[in-house]
Image (cartoon, rainbow, N blue to C red):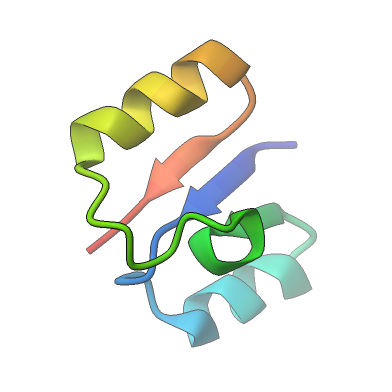
Length: 58
């Protein structure tokens, strides 16, 4: 199963929908990284190091 990471720009309703379909979604709020101005490139680096989640953003 794919694991996703959503930033604060990704709609919470979409997070809920993905979770309802059984996907593991971690939000930036849940990870303590919300509203910190972290660039998408930095998020990719963080997730690449963790090798655990595919970022979802708008």
